[in-house]
Image (cartoon, rainbow, N blue to C red; front, side, top):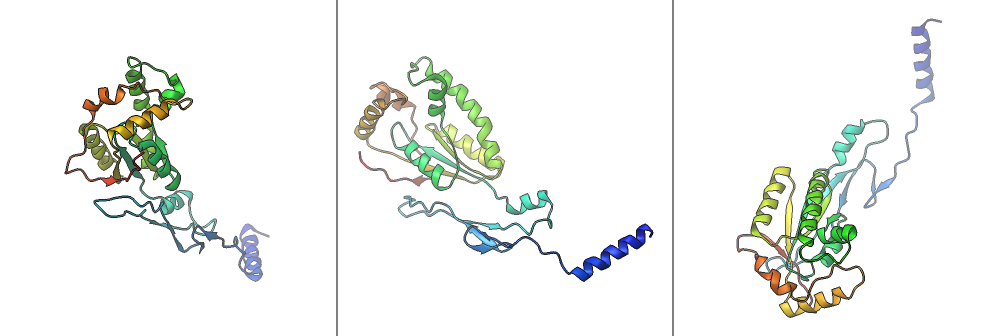
Length: 239
């Protein structure tokens, strides 16, 4: 039998057998059947925003079509979504890292913190002469990584503090260039509360040690938010 005859015979057999069953439809997050839209929701964090609560925003994610019916590149395009930059602003011991860790868990996202990497690489006891250089080197490496993560559609939590206005403006410009939305969160506590937190933290094993005079010595470097800076204020306990 020639090649054309074998092909016709195969088609006839396939038609007689009926359609080949595909993989069983399974639910996607939210209990939606495959092929139907599903909503992926954020953490629903309640934050002070100009006097009112803020809730995590959801985004539509279309479930993957049945296997074998779409190219991998098209599938990735169908489920991808823009990332989001979450930047945490505040002075020493304002509760930034506690809040950033909460965001990291609840979004979920990737958190970037210079101090933690400095401690991991150099230990918690770097002196005031050594720490700034180590922090600059670590920050330079982290700044190579997080834009890529945000561009890939991930939530990125920048636990940097952003003390200076110029750093906040540079971040806004970078977010705009990446085409990624940015939310700036701000935390603040009274000076006596911050000093008490620093003293407690210094007693924790492996924590970055801050001298008692660090609060007053570093305060002149801190630039509070200006009235024109969009921000979500995060309430803090007074302890």
